[in-house]
Amino acid sequence: MSAMPKVAAGLNHVAYLTEDTAKTKRFYSEILGFPLVAAVRNDYDPESDSNRRSLHTFFAMGSGEVIAFFEIEGVKHPPKDDVPTWARHFAMGVESRQQLDDWHARLKEHGVPVTDVVDHDGIWYSIYFMDPNNVLLEFTYQARELDADDASKAETMLEEWNATRASSPADNK
Image 1 (tube, rainbow, N blue to C red):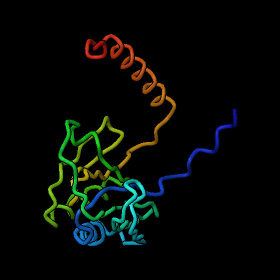
Image 2: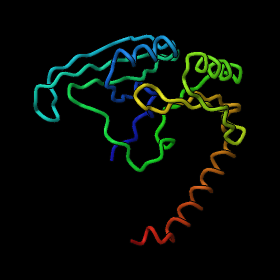
Image 3: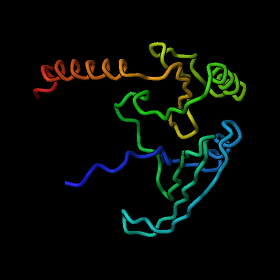
Image 4: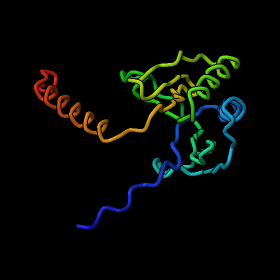
């Protein structure tokens, strides 16, 4: 068995579907300030083994990490499923509570519906809003470093979750 490779250094990009690249560019570049840094065009879809055009665009955050979008000819967003919207989101870190408050104000100024600040156990403070593609976005400020005590509590919580989950009637179907 080979040795575990070094853990990934960071996020390169995450990709989502868009039906309107122009609208996506306006939102990410003009409101959020993420410059368009690259694009790749394809005329072939390897999954369907067919000629189908697509445009893959990349918008950079201050860290250099990227959120990307595919506009694929003839592809529309699938209908909403049963997964709660909050369970799928893209969280981006900001450096201070003031920065979080500044983003809250900017989003409101641009008519973007945004939540009030949510306190996650005094560790993270977050605001949530949707992009034009119905991707739930989060700006979050981490108020303190995570430590060994946080990791220990997480392990205990996971063990308790698994113990109660194993006895859940829904799991015995």
